[in-house]
Length: 162
Image 1 (cartoon, rainbow, N blue to C red):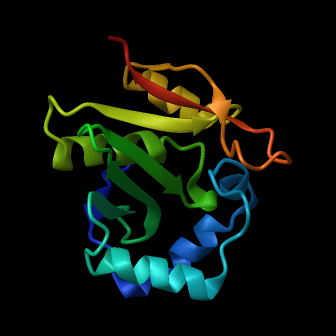
Image 2: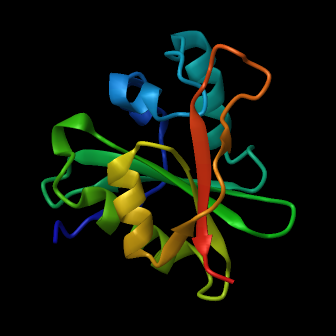
């Protein structure tokens, strides 16, 4: 265990979150696989720091040394289902931080009965393993960007079995 704590975003996190977002593996396994541009990122980030993104909740994961090691967030769908997303600092991957971070987030901010899902790009094995640890099962694969004929990637929504 890494004894992570989760805290609200601050503007001081913008540069770190930008670097995590533009990591090549993060881009490959994001719905939008293109690297973010700084100006757009700052606008997006500012909105979330100020709590202006309805139905969204963002937290930075910090380890016992005070180092930010990841970002975890949820978006709430119209039916009340929470989509849980996360990013781990590339320097801290393969250490179980993603699992611990998501577990802390779910325990701290979601009600036990709240349904949650994890949309995962097919082939993102670390995220697939994480979802399975939470008892989630993969749904039917669909195209990530159906309107973009050049993007052949598939995504599955992992959810609790009905």
